[in-house]
Image 1: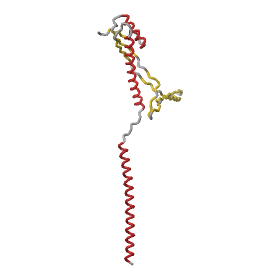
Image 2: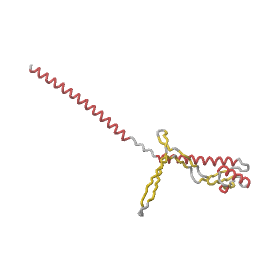
Image 3: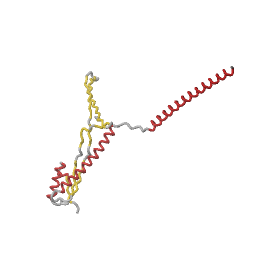
Image 4: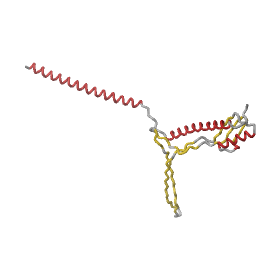
Length: 203
């Protein structure tokens, strides 16, 4: 009888211990999984490169660089067109054109301008008063959204100013041919005749 009771007690104790072991193992596994997830998140977050904040001035500078590049292409195109036109004038022959500019092309962004005016009255030592007006002007570049990034809106593009032209042509030794070349360059570029220099091309 006593033996059977002791056996039941030991059996219950062993069952409870096994149950506790299983519970402890389950808790340990949950903690392990959570820890691994946290480590993974921290590791990946540290390895991600932070993207630099968008700088409006940099975007505007990039736009100016691209404008200068396109301006250079336009300048080359003008020289090429002049060479083709002048080459078709009677007596000119082979011709080379160099156009000089005083500045590069400039992009003028569109601004949102706010003007505030403050009027104050001041008293001087002699008892008189004077009115002081202060005007404050603030400008902000206006942007448009494109592909998730802000791009400055262009108000205008200032074209480069042509300062002069140098032309070498095979038939430039003839006074009439030389005059025709100068007139053609004046018509295309709008510069005065004294800024157009024409020389005979070396054979």
